[in-house]
Amino acid sequence: MVTIKCASDIEKMREAGKIAANALQVCGSKLRSGMTTKDVDKIIHDEITKHGAKPSFLGYGGFPGSACVSVNDEVIHGIPSSQKRIQEGDIVSVDVGAFYKGFHSDTCYTFAVGEIPDNAKALLKITEESLYQGIEAAVVGARLGDIGSTVEQYCRKHGYGVVKDFCGHGIGRELHEEPEVPNHGRAGHGMRIVEGMTFCIEPMINEKGDGVHILPNGWTVLTNSGSLSAHFEHEILITANGPVILTKL
Image (tube, rainbow, N blue to C red):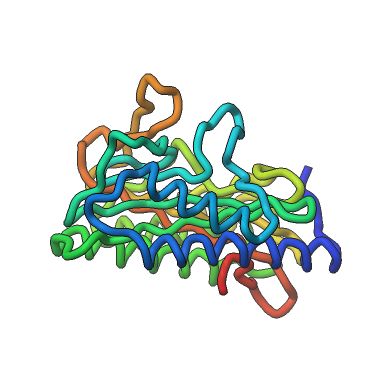
């Protein structure tokens, strides 16, 4: 069931969103070659908890980290590790959520570590642009298929693969609520978008091919092609005046 949020719900979700956005911003300012993905996780954990919130991901379904830290060909759900060291030229997706006053937030950004190759720069640029195009399509009266179609067409036009096995989602008192928000689809199809809905749009875009697989750890998703993957995410609120990003400082 899709939950429509009231004014008091939305205010709490704004606060949770700002906590997650701040943690992501601080992480980006500190991210350096030589750090481990566990170091990244600690930055996120400390920033979220110091504002009185709890990391939404920690313990969720048994996940052992406060953030998903996915490097290069890791699409999503990278488990933080003291053995995995980040290198110059890597791209690192950091996916975070904060639970505050009974509500969750969820956001992701793919960071460049130092100077990255031109192909990686292009992938990050197009993936982030596709997120904002998807957000622009999320207006009252449109359908969820309009969002997915917008993201998919924009990325396909640039020759990239679109991950279909995972998608965006509703959010609120639960981290994952209805509806599902795919990054592919047919315009004019799917659930009608109405005022008061809150959901996450999160393009997961591969340099080559749509295919992905999950490692034996049961979490980490990699591209089948071994190519790079980028992931950007914002949580939005649907209003009569257009979508509002809740995970933005």
